[in-house]
Length: 512
Image (tube, rainbow, N blue to C red):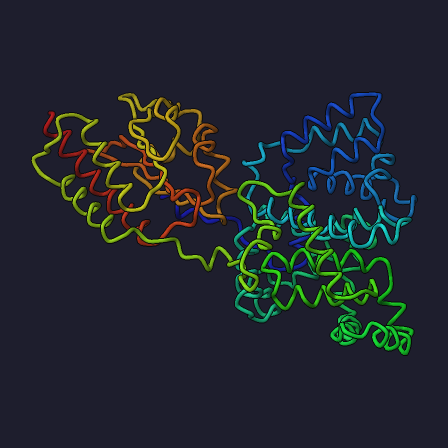
């Protein structure tokens, strides 16, 4: 069966099934954080607060510790731990060290991009919460800090296991304005807020997290009333008077737990752009909550975004602070909206010429290097920015790099033992093509040899094995610099592969 026809596990369609699946996911933590925390736990001079501060660099580690403390320790302790320090105290360092050993530790670039992006949003939200609210509610800073960091955590395992679903939701609901209810039932079978709340309750996350989801699900009318008052930011006195006239609304809106929701609303909305209506709504609500002007809130929010970027921005991730440098009305496009640039007419002309040369019979090539050089040029001309052509030895035990483009020079000496990779064994058993996408990246990337994965850090990758005279002799690996693949380039890649196969066969027969 061709590799591309392998069907992934079915998407759950009920709340219980989703909770069971996502609860079983072990989130990876960065190798650097893993080593630092492991060393700190073994150091008797380090306090729980020191260890908690080190853990903050890995939101997944924070979640794992909080879940372990709140879900598996004695429930007679009452309320869930509201801070990481309390959770560490409940677990003890020995059990924390055991938990750390059970978690997968990966190089940061090897952690799924969708998961890293979402965790960075959570870190941005935590910075917004600290900067806007923690100093005003100093006695509650722990609840504000950890609640805001963990608010989106029910989505983290979803981002790891079904990244394509989240991306489709963002494209259709946020960017195209489709009905959230309709899209979510189609994609997930359940409402996303219901799933987040159910998972937060199952994990016994801090109360302010579950309270935020309860607000969004069951108290939206109260939120709408507060927003109606907040929409006139020019009269702070009038706003306060309207709240005073509705004491139930005032008490509900002024709950400290609402800071967690406000901070995450600001951070999520800013992912699209600073002038979109969602950002303004959350800024207006924050202005009403803080009883200050909208101008002040906007200035503070931008400052906190910059502070967050200094600490949390990372290669390959988008941080809203970047957009502060853009033209003011420019919005960030979803990657599903960004069509990769097709090859130019000149490049396609060069590609057709190279393919025609590959198809000449009898074979004009004097040696294999001559043939693969032309093959490399054809692949580059059709839009492939990084590529490697690997040739199999006569015993089909290893693959050796034969041609490279767009890769470090040392990649030219790469040798891959076939028996050490089930994916390579599959590809080399018969001619096949595998296309890696964000949807199947988690499933297949781990099966790639580590050296190959480090050269092609991409969720958009093509692998194709080529045969000659009934025997697989070559493997092509190519991408477009880690960007989504242009359809025309993918089609040209396939046609080029067919031309190379014919050239290999003609060359082999000529040599014979």
